[in-house]
Length: 92
Image (cartoon, rainbow, N blue to C red):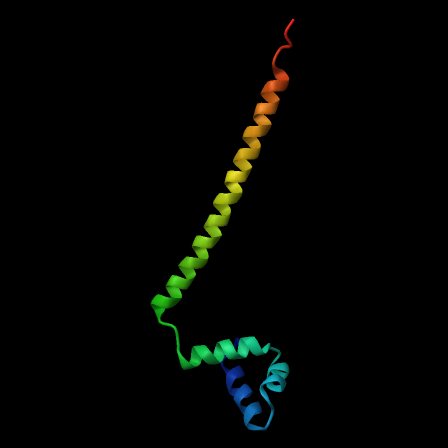
């Protein structure tokens, strides 16, 4: 729920009698987004929790990058072996 006025508008819609699904549809968000926002409002994350979450995301991204690079390296080594074998002089 991006802007600061969206939650206020959302609450006004609920106060006017709309249910959660209707208010979500009107605001252009999914119910999951609303409940996530609501949970954060009731129990805001500390800066440390946010930083840990950001670091966990970065670690996951870097692990994927390392795996991709390892696969690329293995493929290049195999291609190099095949090239070397193909360039060997034939016996005889």
